[in-house]
Length: 415
Image (cartoon, rainbow, N blue to C red; front, side, top):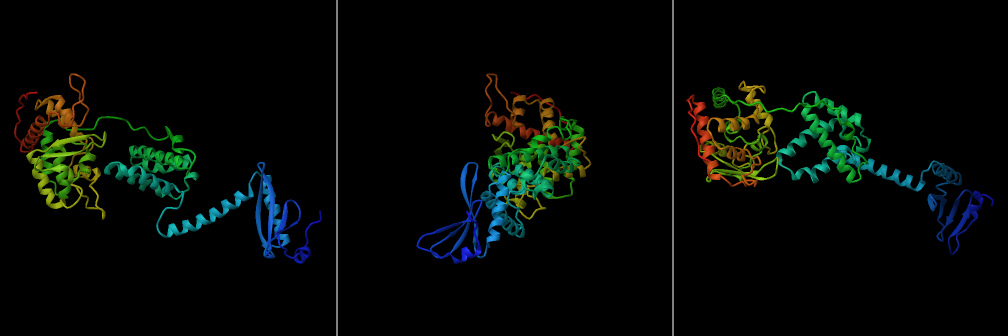
């Protein structure tokens, strides 16, 4: 069959039905009844018959149509479907335009690690505790500058490791936690078709091992009294001072103290009720008269806020951080080798049992640990609540005695 010529194309007039003028190698012209002349290329890919539109004549000349056909046939020879390649190119151009607009608005680019991470955060992390949300945001703040703008499919293990190494220099523990969060983002990406594998699993064993150990704690009554007096003399933020006063008195987990909310505290019944962050189980903390006094003073300052201990360093309402309390302890001269916020729990456990002689079960229950009775049944949150009210008041009185330099004589408590 003879190839098409420009003369043939120009001389062919439309009729009452579409006409087909063939060239070669699957290229032909389709002349519509309205006179429009469309270039078409028929081809077979993976056993399926397909058609690719190449534009209209004379905008696309005969030579141009043949060149486009040759380019399409080369793609087919390389295992590429020209139709899919064109769609992918259009999608890429459209996404580039959208990403330009997103960048101008300060938003993460589509399909980037930051984009997927924030989507994961909205769907998964927002349902967790406020403290956990803050931790995740802190990890993102460290990760995003390094890999946030990269397409999640373009991030490899060495890239992620480089980002984690920077974090590891200051905090090996934070680096390992950040790796865990990155893994959750990648696994969410797999489930939602943003990526195909979790590259964080390739970094198993690549980070420094964090040695496990007990939290340092003061169990010497004389030294504890010195710490309590130092807290009373704290000249920094009133909110931080109040939290430091309550930390040894209530001995809850630091994250729970920092994220305490006014809605959970009943000063009349002298109880603080909340969900334990570690187990998501209900817990009750009886409040001594000293704790109620501190909270009452604090309520005149932060009572209109959601959080009991509101941070003064953020525009958006947020609770204070553990770091702020730790900094307060260090400022008072008590280093991490001597005590930590979590160490107050060990302090209370030791002195309540060894000095004040309270039953082990009551202490462990107040620490929100799982405690079982002689029949193997777990105590519920309200069990021994009257006794725990007495214990928490005795503990606050004991701390007052240490703070004032009194000699506390232990006495036996009934079970």
